[in-house]
Amino acid sequence: MDVSQLKQYVDDRPEQGVFRVHRAVFSDPELFDLEQRYIFERTWQFLTLESEIARPNDFVTAWIGRTPVLITRDAQGEARAFANVCRHKGSVVCREERGNAKYHVCAYHGWAYDAGGRNVYIKDGKEGCYAAAFDAENHDLLPIARVERYKGLIFGSLSPAVPPVEEFLGELRFFIDAAMEQGPQGMEFVPGRAGYTYRGNWKLQMDNGVDFYHLTSAHKSFLAIQKRRGAGEGHVDARMYDWSKRMALDAGMFQFRSGHTVGWLNQVEVEKRPIYPAIPEIRGRVGDALADWMLKPRNLVVFPNMQIADATTLLLRTFRPLAPDRTEMTVRCLAPIGEPPERRAWRLRQFEDFFNASGFATPDDTVVYEECQTGFNAQPLDWLQGYNRGMAAIEPGGNDLARNLGIKPVASLHAAYRVQNEVLYHPMYREWARLIECGLCGREAYQ
Amino acid sequence: MSDARMLLAAGEEVLQREGIYLDEQRWDEWLDLFAPDCEYWVPTWTSDRTLATDPQRELSHIYYANRQGLEDRIVRIRTGTSPASSPMPRTAHLVSAVLALEPPAPGRLRLRSTWSSHVFFPRTRTSCTFFGHASHELVQRDSRWVIQRKKVVLQNDFIPTMLDVYCI
Image 1 (cartoon, each protein chain N blue to C red):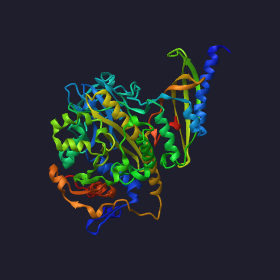
Image 2: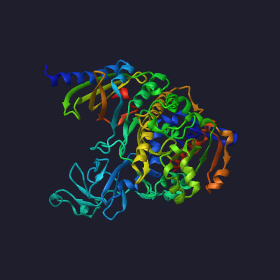
Image 3: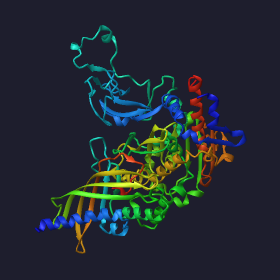
Image 4: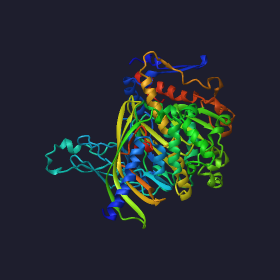
């Protein structure tokens, strides 16, 4: 693909009030391949939490783009990440999601590696009549180029040329802190997986994770149930919020560098937050500003494929592109370590009610992604018109709120929720185009 | 027929009716099979090998401490405004390998069963199958057996797009 063609995909002319994304961005197999090469394999990717591999020899498996990854806590207590493939014939070495193991043995020819990735055993090696050249080679698991941590989150990158992860997250860190500092002992994933797949492009989830506009249409049935619950009928254990008041609430968004974005709104019924009983402790530890923001619904995207949503209850999700029209979702319930049992159960009921693929909201999202994907094949359709709400209300740089928080976004918006802005998608598509352009021009992505 | 066989047959009928009512979208009759204070639980897997054991500490696909959550599901389906449930998927539930286990208390029945549910989505003209096993505790109310507790083990837990109560 020629780089000049990129303008056919993202039409970004802020001075004329135009921002358009072409349907091919979601369906073109050639673009899918470029995304793998120049986005997923060149940026930071969330791998796991520190608390998921708390003890020596704990491990989890994950993915960076097409690369299977093994993340371990080595015997010395250091978090490590490797391509989860045997050096012998390339077979996936560790075939489990999680566990604790001193050694990882390849199922194919029995080569073994310790938790630090060191090759400790080549089966029948002495009898193998290997040449000296083989013995001179390194046989250890291949380390992922970069592994860094931020507030209990472990990220990895296949490219050595990424900036430090703190710099990559940049000013978005305030909002990450609002999730990761909720617990005095840090944060953990509640045990239990609720993974699912859908027949649609990964960017449908990227967008929808911060989509304010679909609530009253796609989730109409959920709002109907919620209204009934307000009258004391139905699954009131979920302690879901009164959504009918949303439209008039104060809301906004911040755009950040590196493709990151956040949408936020004010909260009604803050007392339904599972952290609410702990808020005095939280205020004392992190200060009023961050504590207040922990109570506000906030959905953020760490470009390209990690989201922390806290509009109903705290969630961390990643999505993995399997094909242009197929995506795998990993959705985890994020909670303070040491949370009292009553609040943990409260959190779980909120999470299951809304976020599960077997819940009341997510299935309606996922099904409409599939309708979109079908629609993206429509020949007369060119530019999508879903990136424009809020265009006339953008403030360049930080607004008063940002200044008060001491953060420097690229742009801000602060208005009633009913604007249901779509401008918070812009940094994601700008970064998408930028990274692919860098790749096609043979430039480093980060200078 | 022995008393034990008659009991098993009575219990098994409740399990079969569950599937039939879902397949025929006889939602009120389906709800009526459950006691108002029934527990309905579909645990998640916590690793490739282990199933969650405590719905208060671990994530569930679905957990309701009483029937009201199931009632919400039916309200949602009936709104006709849930994209996931319109057009309504068509289902066929199969229940077999029903065994009576030691009852938890006198006057109760405890059954284990194997189930599969075929789901056809008219929207995409595709089908999928969910399968697993279940345990039921039944209790007699107003001289009929109703479900007091149901635990569904979903063996294929990586969900294609969505899952609702009518899929399991």
